[in-house]
Every structure is written in structure tokens, then in C-alpha cells.
Image 1 (cartoon, helix red, strand yellow):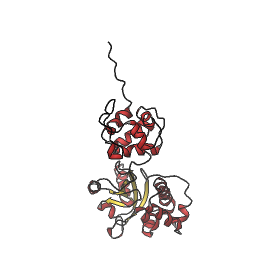
Image 2: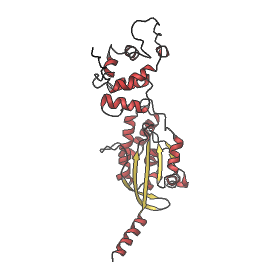
Image 3: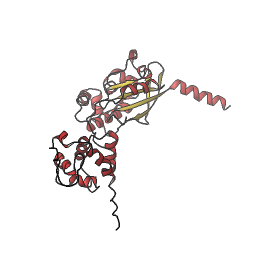
Image 4: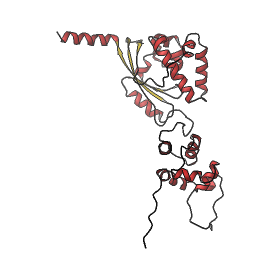
Length: 283
């Protein structure tokens, strides 16, 4: 007699089935299965339990685990992730397997910066200007090199407000009207579109629109911009004078919406000295 081989599970089932087994039905409001229930004893939540809890028609969750649920809705994947207590990595993997791309919706509402003390340590160890903000551009961590860029060596509470609404920001950020402001306006609008419930972003948006100087620029943005990664712009440093600010941007994985920015500043005087050295050595 030939022994039947067990059909391999779809990778989504491999990911989610062990998570279901960890959740007791009574912990999520379902009755505890009777001890004398016929059939195999399933550990944790069954697939039918998942349909009940997620308010979906029968076998919807079965099709998800089998890889047969084509393009599952965003809110469904969020609900599955929260019900099964997926980690951030597991949640990302679920989206990659089910949709072919990273999550477009966070597993949980953003709560700020994960591991702020580590990010502060990272900032302190960086010789270039470095800072980290949350999704609303509220400053969460920065180093002393970044603080030196501001009056009295004190960094602002919110970088968007400083850059778009203060006279200091408009003076420090050279060519503000033509380069900085249009790009910053587009980035702020993109952040608000991604986080429409953020009261901080809503207030900044309203204040910028109402501002006599920033408003007309903000209201006439034509070129989209998401982040300043790889951008080089002119900046007037209070200690080192005018120069080029080369920016590197990234998003911390465990902190949706947060931004890590490194600003590599090269004073124009230093750059000119370098060019003169090269010219002299060539003769």
C-alpha cells in the first residue's frame, strides 16, 4: 500500500497556521470547543473561526491560507495581522506573499519611534548632521552637529514648521523660494495624504496654506516629492557660511512614517580651497 504524501501548504499557510494555533478561542470571545467534539482536535483558532471573527463568508480565510484569494483587500490583511498578533516582519511577509509588495497600511497606528534611545545613540555617533522625525516631522532624535545649524544651538520641535514657516528657515535654506519650498511643500502634502488622521500634519497644512509667503508656493505645487534622498541644495550654515547640503534619507523599518535624515554639509570656502589645491598641483 502506497502511503499518501501530505500536500505541501502554501507559504501563506506556513506563515499563518502556527499563529492561529497560539490563540485560544475563548481569549477572543468564542466558546471553548467541547472536549468530546468529534474529528481531529485543532489547536487554537480554526479557519472557520477566522471567518467568524473577521465577519467574512465561509472559506474566505481558507482561500487566503491556500493562496487562492486573489488580491485580498487591504483592510482584510490588516485585520488578519492584528487578530493573529503578527510581528512587523510577519505582517510584511504576509503582504509580500499575498499582494507581491510591502504593506501600504500599517499593522498598528504609528506610535512614534521604536527604540528612540538607539536612534539617539546612532545620531550621536554620526559626524555629519543627523536627525530623526516621526510621521508628522516632529523631531525625535538629533546630534549636536544638527543643533549647530540653528540659532543658539537649539533644534526646532518640528522641522516642517521651521523650514516652511520661520524667517530663520527661509534665510538658512538658500534659494528657499525656488528649490527648498516647492519640494518641502510636496513632501508635506504627501505625508498628509499618507497620514490623513494626523492632527499635527493637519495643523501644519492649514498654517502653511494660510501663510502669506509659503501659502502661494504650497498651493501651486506641480512636481511630486516624497523624500529628499540624494538631493543636493544650498544652505547657509550659521558657523561655516554658505555651502552644499547633501541629503540622505531613509525610513526606520519598525517605525512607519518616521524619517532618518543625514545632511552632509560642504562649505563653499572648503570646496573652493580644494579646487585651488588641485589647480596648483597640476602646474
